[in-house]
Image 1: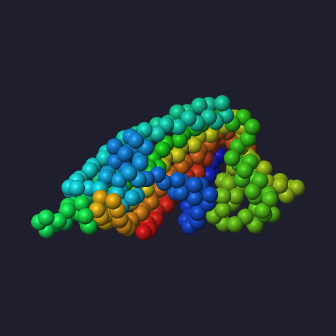
Image 2: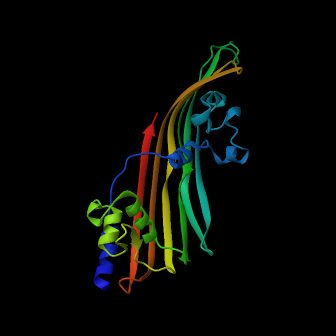
Image 3: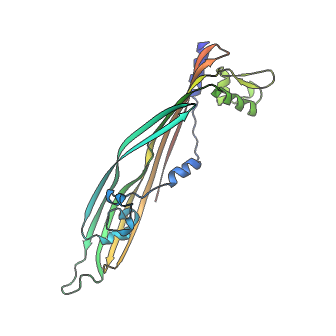
Length: 277
């Protein structure tokens, strides 16, 4: 008896596959991108429009025209993300701390030499070139929750899938969750043509999710100052995204038909990466 129940764990954990798609959660996650900036501009609300700060490399290249000398900036960042999960009357707190490089930039100033006697504030005054890196968003987070389910089991879900989509057990597709659940005694099949859960209630259910990754950009910019009245600039940015999510849900309880304990584990991995200009 025990041997067959353990096979259920091994078989379902071994079920893996690859999918290539996007959904609304990804659209929301990747669309909310704040501007990267120095610590100084973050303190005043990331007002890069005023220029004169190395944050201009990524968001306002014309602001580089205000520089009168070469500068370098480095901004480390510490983030602490907490989660509060509640499930079936149980509460679980999670926390993830991360130290990262939020911003690094350099600007090279080239002040034009004026002929003797010519006003210094007329015509083109300076040309500035900038290179900057911004970590615009971090995805690091831990979410864990658990609880005792007194109403149903994950086997109820498998039995509903099998009943709604298939007929007799020999019609269950090889490698499908329904097929593995049936082969490993998590669900059964009755004479009326219905699948039913062979597991009991009062089982312990647990979910653990660990998320990592970030969004960043590398910018090249040019800014110029004309008569201390007109500031022009242009930039090009290379953006990249990297998001990883590792989730494992498990259930352990009692198999009423086999009269034995069981442990079921299902793992899901999402790896998303991309880049653009």
